[in-house]
Length: 245
Image (cartoon, rainbow, N blue to C red; front, side):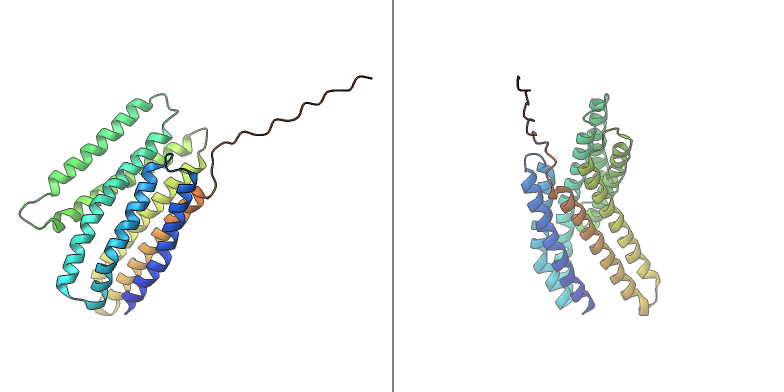
């Protein structure tokens, strides 16, 4: 019953913020932020696609339906985390636009990202077991890589002379999401070491913490795009000429 209430609360909190963030990006211009709107739309559709399976899994507690939900969940997570990694690389690409060594930096980041994804996949992939068992550690590695790149991006923005406040908010929001998910998973893992009396409460607490971190992330992104930062040409001041006497 507690998990059902948390699930309903997460929908009531997450979906409105997601819609507000998407609407704000659309107002600012899809062409200016194509990967951001792609990420927001993809996560929105992923949540909608998983909603029936998640609801059935919570209500029925049947093993077959839970296993099917896990397969769907990890498959979608694989796509989303690849998209997150590409998104963070694109933000680094944007932030390094005025650096003298930007070409070398961009090439190195893209190459390192692709190598990391490929090497991690080669390490975890196992054709002898169901993909659910190797997909989770692979997506975890991609999430870690994206978090490291986001931290590097944050440091790059802080030392920059000209501050891009929107990019700072976007980077900070992603960092909060990464940190929140990591803390939530740590709390859930700690639940295994508690007794039966407290294990479920600790696990649910970690689940709630992750939901709140995602909500804060979406709220920050919504605020970042609420106002368009496109410079607008100002009105020319009227020329006043002295009248001849």
